[in-house]
Figure 1 (cartoon, rainbow, N blue to C red):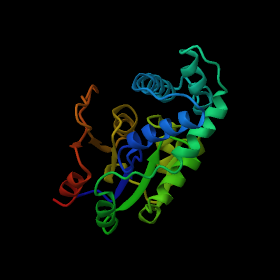
Figure 2 (tube, one colour; figure 1 turned 90 degrees about the vertical axis):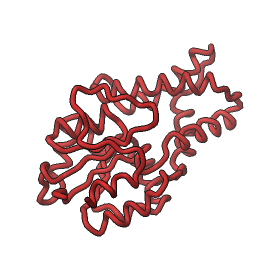
Figure 3 (cartoon, rainbow, N blue to C red; figure 1 turned 135 degrees about the horizontal axis):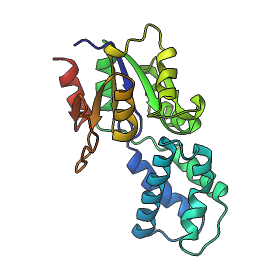
Figure 4 (tube, rainbow, N blue to C red; figure 1 turned 30 degrees about the vertical axis):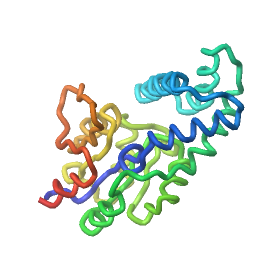
Length: 228
């Protein structure tokens, strides 16, 4: 295999963000004295995904989204809440969510023997550090690149240029991006001239013009690709 550098997304690639999100949302509502419903959670997920897509397109900033998403959500149900206060409550639970993807330590430990491993993630710096440290994953990585600290996020050229400039002897032709998001990980990697590996969740459909270099459905599949 011709790669020497692997760039990993975090959420739903290394750590199970979906499980963390659901648990943290429930805990936040309980603390705020609001009843949980699947309909409320579904509305939040749809709205939140749309807002993060706006960030990826450069139409909104991370702080704008984080400070308003819960006030916007609850306003749909006729309630006025302090968006920043709710965000802080939610994040206090989210920071400690370290649900791992199956087999992640086994995979990273084996890959660490042969490749340079880095994290590339969109998100809040404090949260991502807390979660990676809590999951005992920091030891595997030679560097961590987080959109909030960089001031730009995947899939932008600015984000990937920063990554390239801060990895010693970086060669795009010998680097592989691994992630679950077509619009940030795969598209961003493709635009940056790198091969990509899409961690495809069940039922997901590739709507990009260009196919990822590889498609996996489990982290163990990555070992089979890289150890051929």
